[in-house]
Amino acid sequence: MQKKAGIAHARGALVLVDNSIMSPVLSKPLELGADIVMHSATKFIVGHSDVMVGVLATMANVAAFLQTVIALH
Image 1 (tube, rainbow, N blue to C red):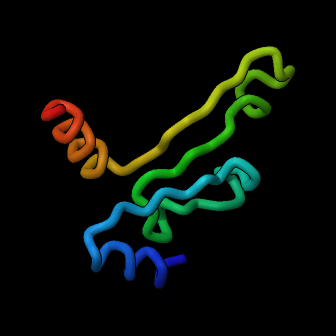
Image 2: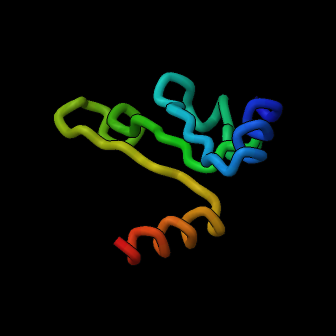
């Protein structure tokens, strides 16, 4: 994953990882070069599937960049 993230970053792309199957306990894509990680949190937070929950995790510098881009649009 680090090699692929490096290739994407060299071309100016952000790396997004869907980490819904693996939990954040078992897989930490942000530590391997991902910029944004998507987690399905329905089972972890709610537990009964009566509510759908998702989480986007990122590092502070990427969050600041995204806030700037969103403010421009």
